[in-house]
Amino acid sequence: MITFKTQFPINSNKSVDDLFETGRIWLAGSPHSTLASKMSNASDIKDNWSTESENEKIRFIKFENGKKLSALRHENIDHSGMRWVTEVACAKSADDFWLSVQLSVDSELPVEKIEHGKRPHIIKTIIREIGGGMDGELPVSDKPIHLKEDQVELAADVITAKAGCQMPVVYVSSDNDGNSHINPAKLSHWLSGMAHVLVEPNRSFSFDLAPLVYRENAYGGAIAIYWPDGIGKWLFLPQGKYLDPKELQISITRKVRDSLLSQRTRRECTWGHIIEQKSRKRIQELRNSGSEKVDEYIAEFDIEIASKIEEIQRLESEVNRLKHSYFGKEDGRPLRTDGVVLSSSEADLYQGERLSLIMEALSRALASSEPHSRRHHVLNDFVNSNSQPCEKDTIIESLKELLRAYREMDSTTKAELMRLGFDIREDGKHYKLTFRNEKRCPFILPKTGSDHRGGLNSFSDIKKRLF
Image (cartoon, rainbow, N blue to C red; front, side, top):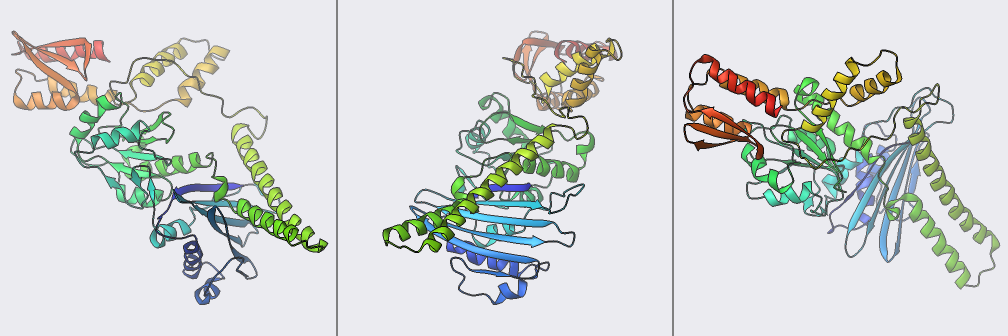
């Protein structure tokens, strides 16, 4: 079963041979490897070099045919009899240099549960020893990319999938105080080789960015994962359990890792492909030489067939993983079904607005439905499966507190209203307010409040029409 995989561009100034040395350094420095001593003393590792111990083995291969390819395969049988296989393969052409890392686990005996294992430590070694390459307009690194104030267009290109990136991007927005809710450096370290981490410079940056991305940007401390195909995003708001930065970082990392499992690995960046190419070349060499050594032909065909069988087993394992993630273990009923897509020409005025409105309507329908009815079960599933915090409550709470004691539009009140997203213009004896460019719902505030109820009345009007 494949439990981890990723692929990313690496430093184009390096060669495929550098993967061999990186693999040696990785195991030589591992306190858990029984091959550490052998790898520390290993030198001049070449094609088909291998070594092993009682429970562990590693092999290196390379091939060249238009592209330069190399790979390593490490197998380790742990104390419980589980076989962990780490495959790292890279392919270099004149235009790019990509590398893939895959971790899989299996057992000869049935087991109740298979752990997914940690992210392979070799990724950290690769980033340190070889270095990341350029993924479109973004460098691959174990450090966050701190955007500058004049890089609004770059941020827009990333969010709208125009930056040429093939890796996911985690966008960390700035809160109202100009800070990040999570630790970008730590998150980047966890996601190195898996995703980029972009960090906003300040709160005003998001206001400049919003109109360029149809207001699809995360802002106000929220964090979003943007996928390289430009289809949607996954939004995390610093509310509820995500008020804990560590909990939020763990959830983001888990989401990226799980999503990468469904990504198709470049064929040339797989161990099986390189083995197959080497075998085909050897068969062709035997044919060209007029060799009649049948045993050699058979041996090479066996190698090619074995590589194809291994690829088939890998794909079957992937099918089984997807099947078991979709169907329940006991009654075979789906645990997950296709989502319902609703068309809309409106954009969110605040994060999670449209989903929040839908969920409120569904919650009211659920409350009025007949218990134990099909309608009740379906509505209950919708409500429980799509509960996601939105920004509405935070805005309402801030607005109520601000207008509770409203007497006049002083500089503090004006600044706070603008921070929430209101545009303020004078209109005779009143101020005309529009929220985040929603001109169909303007609001009026008097220049001077009549009494202590005036501000709350204005708040009530805004709440009814806007929320």
